[in-house]
Image (cartoon, rainbow, N blue to C red):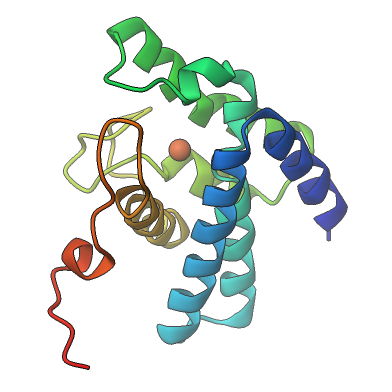
Length: 162
Ligand SMILES: [Fe+2]
């Protein structure tokens, strides 16, 4: 168990870009809740919870002003932001984080139609699929400098009946 390494890395993220840190905690919590709802084994729930916390850890290598840029990014800037996936995975490998967590982190921006990054391949694990969904949900329901937040029920396409 290397929870102390997780904590150390998360504190680095909080110091660098607190919005990403709190986003990671929300994604992590959502991953845990949905995995329990789906009846995943405790071990997998635990792994996806940790994956949620660490999925954007590579953003500590992306300049703060780029992470908070209030508008669409130039191509070069966007490539720099996208590099957080591979940089984060390399960092986690150096800390000998569980390989399933590293795979989930590598796959969290991949998409089922192959349009994602960094590989544009359909090589997502179950952990990275759930992580990707929770990541998008949180990103869409969050206020950004250039757009309003989408209501949670609108994101999932459900009309509340309560
Ligand atoms: Fe990400």
